[in-house]
Amino acid sequence: MYICEIFVQCGARFSEVLPDALKDVELLVEEMTGQVLLKLFGAGMVDDVNICFASYAQTKLKQYVMHIHAQFDREGFTLLPRTEEHVKEAIGRSMGALLRELFLSAEVDAVTLKPAPWDCENTLPYSHSLL
View 1 (tube, rainbow, N blue to C red):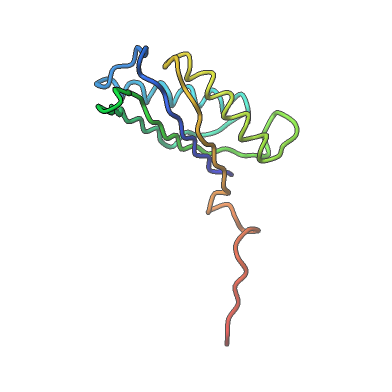
View 2: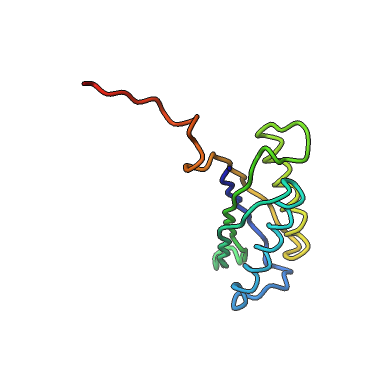
């Protein structure tokens, strides 16, 4: 199992999303992320979606900042090659395309992957006793 974090910025200038409807939008983004995981990995689980509305008075810039936390089995990746970079790129491209449908402007800033701590028996650091 791998843990995936996706960081996104979405412009709010032309968005239909209202700041007081963020919980509903978070649920929609959770569903969209689940569809991406299903398409790319055959399964997956979305743990959390957090969306914050930010408005910067000095620049009159309005945007949404999004953090998505999910899990999936990387071995189920349906595309080749199964390299970490290709997995990240496919997630970013798929999420960006879906989020642009909702926000009109969406940029995936980063996709991070790391093995789940409960699934790392072969990747734990070596330790030894001094006794």
